[in-house]
Image (cartoon, rainbow, N blue to C red; front, side, top):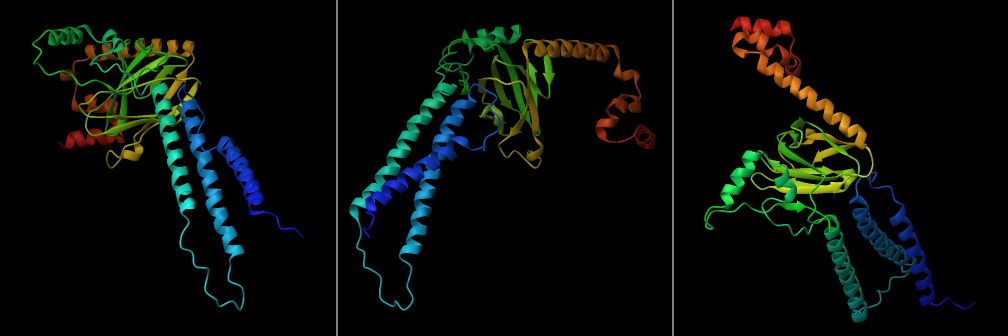
Length: 329
């Protein structure tokens, strides 16, 4: 019987490995549901890397298995193995191929980063969207600062994921100031005065998050958006994106920020435009009512127990316990 050439076996193995790696790389379920305009860009890059990783795994592990079977020690064979000095073409091959792969992946990643807005050239202290939503007093102070001598210190430019090439030099539809503290996220809406512990945004809107940290480094990560940006103390960072799927998605701090880092979680709620308008209106009314109640009540006229009574539930104690503690002091 004629022996099958090694080159033919290699060709067949290459076709099989390619088919398997492409199928697994494009049909895995490792990533959560896509919910932003940037998510397909990241997933496309991840799928390419995963396809290459699967192919390399099959080639390396498959070769090991074949060699274990083909060149295993036979019973009664006590001879030495074949002396191998080296194979220069093979060594050049397995060095050149990974080099080319890494270079191509690097070029691809730069392109993805640019399309996501990572190369936003607007390296100035305040973007148009930021200035448009600044309070008048802050804006006046900023203009006053810029009119001073050129030797005055300048504000560091914002870094992070900014406008994409399609939205460059265009103001965002919604600007939200995000502050990270141990161990929570606080979201402030400058255009409406709403402050919330959750991020509420309309689907399809170009959203800009102005990130900052009060104490230590935090990292704002939304897995479904495929976006993560550090919040740094004293250094403003930016995260700009477009949500494409209504729903509720987790927000996780991805930077070890202290003992309760694991509990620093909240959620981003993507509304339809109508639902978002309703939420904004309801919260504006509710916060105005709370403000009126605070102004109407003089804390000096309240006893200690009456002043703390609204907070007993948050403190995890009963009103009776609070009263006894106050009386004992």
